[in-house]
Length: 167
Image (tube, rainbow, N blue to C red; front, side, top):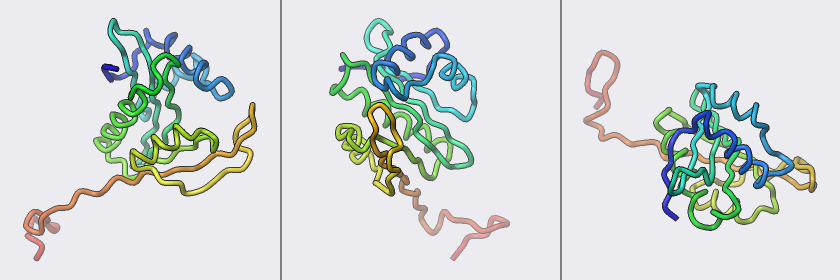
């Protein structure tokens, strides 16, 4: 499925809220919470739009002082298993890096094998479990962490204070 990834805008909140409710009925963010996130500069809020501009998925992350947290990733039922979630996650990771994010965490239902596989494929590793974290139905949360590789510099490119070359 071909999609365009772009920052979310207020006019899309109705579509985003509907996808959120369909994908995450027990944990869905309200339209007001989504609107608040849209106005918060620490939030990274992206949508995936199919032809005609129809929103088919969204991702919401927070990046503060180098630490990131994936808060919500949802794809409309009709667009699932077609690469939309992966495209959103990759775009969010790229933007998080641009914002100097050194680590990003998330919680995912322990029974959500498809999401866990996606996160693993994108470099997240399990680091813990929160027993009984989710309700309706009750489920554990698997805590996962992504730590992007730090860029390496050639020794000749590194400089010390004062502009001197480090040797």
